Length: 207
Length: 207
DNA sequence: CGAGAAGTTGAAGCGTGTCAAATGCAGTGG
DNA sequence: CCACTGCATTTGACACGCTTCAACTTCTCG
Image 1 (cartoon, protein in one colour):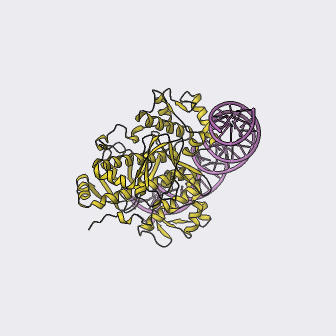
Image 2 (cartoon, each protein chain N blue to C red):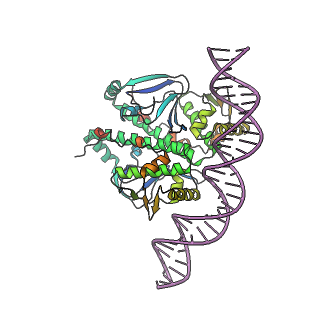
Image 3 (tube, rainbow over the protein chains, first blue to last red):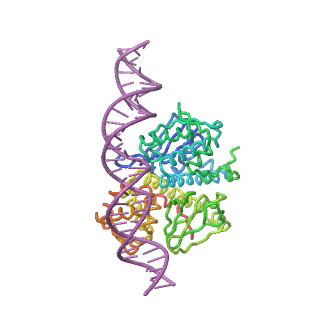
């Protein structure tokens, strides 16, 4: 999906990773969010007329497409769905705010460490992480576009983190031998992900 | 309102400016959003248990406080209110995304110019701007905390913009003699504010 | 009139970007 | 099976935007 287009359906990622991004006139690109399996890409397509950003797959993805009419029908049939969507929207906004902090205040190694923590924790919460490792299909260019750093500097920073034994990154797999240490390095506080499931009572009952 | 606290009411700004911010353990502070008159500070207090950020007044403010019960009651009585809130939430998220781009991709002068454009356009949309000027109570420290720049560099960057005749900034008043020129400098595209009021049909009917 | 906050300026240092080149690796076609 | 291609990763040297520190000035308000 491209910025400026209108879109009539919402997509939910079943498998694979995707991202939201914006491009400046002169070509600079900023990745704004990552979508992991289970994430909803964009239900606000039903609210705005025109996309103000683009969405792209990072790996091959399998998505569940939900049309406007199906969406309305589901909302009508399952009242709690609307609450679940509020919850989703709230958490997505909280993540976006944390990215703002990340880009504004943290230096390169904190910034990358923070992003790695977030991705690991989110995957873990979705049951997609091992004890200390997870799939990691992002290239260093992706990481750079997400953190506002040059590819070259991402490379050097990853090396630092590797040499400090904070991460292992090979074969599209991220290993975090000591998550507490990495979180400390990143000043990562998972509260913004609201993972304690305090919103469980808002979950949609789809049965 | 402080990060970590829980909060039982929502506030709407009637007069004055406020901001949302987060603080890192070591004291670094990032302003995440500005609230202008008419903006809702935070209705997601009704969704999450605990604030993951703080809110502070920038100028003296006058707010309308809405309790949980009033809120629920209003939602029940005015069905379109819920749609209006979706619209509000969508636009707020879009602004947050643009801030991510701003911090990640733009250099100091673009970044500040972009923020000034956004504030001016938002005030103008609310009928709070003159032809080419508006109230502007932010200090250079505020600007720095919002743009991720040091106060010193904000100062120098403002001087550049002033010397290029892109802005005038004195006595808490911002003057933009040539908004098109400033927007060009900032690569500012107002589409993310969705000001064409494409969502007008979602407005709450409060009569 | 005095004191604290906000704005201003210069000099020096450092974190990141840029440029350029080399290496490794996977897929493709001959 | 190997040469070829394109993409991702890696590394070094150098440049520059921004930060830091420190001092000074100008505002604001009691």
